[in-house]
Length: 207
Image 1 (tube, rainbow, N blue to C red):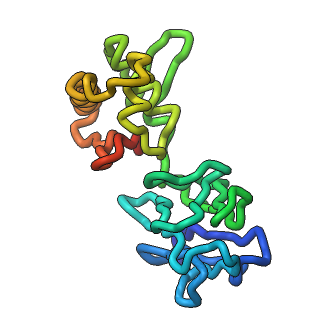
Image 2: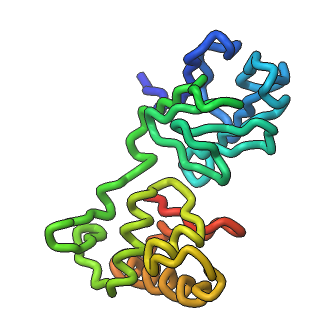
Image 3: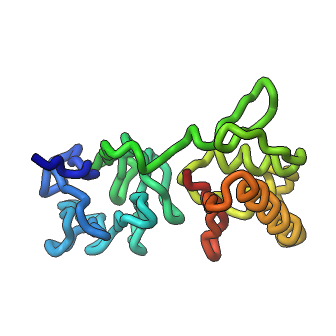
């Protein structure tokens, strides 16, 4: 007897959602007011195609599809691609959640792969200590605090240098820091590709 692989699901939290449960079995699921959407939301403020959930690189991500009134993840408006984690709640045209994301496949995220010891002020990758400069440590700390979330260049600059303006002046320094972090991760695991560049937006730490 074979066992089916775990399937991620979107579970309705409101009668405004036409279907009580949707299995995320395909590459992309659309959410919106249109009857052609996999998840139909009966709310006038919802756009016809409001948001999308897609499987990218083995992880489910949420994107707003150019809606007028916004898509919300755990109460925060989605302004860039966001990785979904079990228990996340999605709001459509309102922060109040309409959908609950469930994923029983624990292999989709491995937060313990990159471990932080606050007492030692050190990071461990595959249980090996990463030798980091102070700036590298601050940047990696920011990435880890936002696993699965896109870190904008502006937020990265503030996390390392506490600069709220003149971000362009730090562009080269930030690119160099990211390059150095990637190089040190690859020294531990040559296959490591956990810091993704999201073109036009920033960086994403995937574990």
